[in-house]
Length: 216
Image: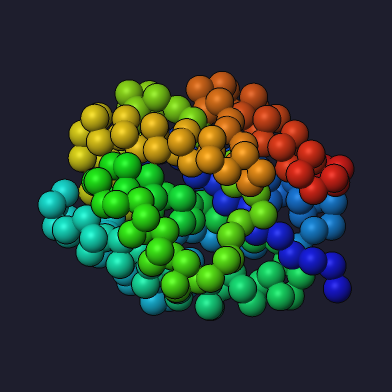
């Protein structure tokens, strides 16, 4: 059985991760790679219940550390029920967000100590990490405008709790993702999210080809 790989897409609100995940999954499937797409918070029944607690409601609904712990609980369910079984089965898994989002949003965004978040992750999940992380970088002004348009026409228009936290919060998140990429060059590739959809996908495809030495 071939080895499964774990690819995560990260970035601020409105970065276009969902669209690019669909395109990447389709490209991998077209060359015979069984691919599963998923998301955080969510990706498993229990994790989806926790998602509802995090993405809906008032912006100050949770203390920052409570958010860290809720995301960690959701991640435990996600890994146990979805990600790990798929990887063991030889499937490739593409996730819309993973642990880097917790560090960016709750760490850089809300000010929870980085070492505390990293220690919680290490205690819960040991040395498990994605094989490749694609960070779609976009300015908060552009991303939030896109996210607002998307929410207006979406099936879950109320999932906007983080979007309502202000531009300065989202600028700190952007800075956080770029810092994470700088500190993890062996795993992270920054993609210019302000290119058009085809341009973003071309950059993603190039990164996947380079990292896994495949043709897609």
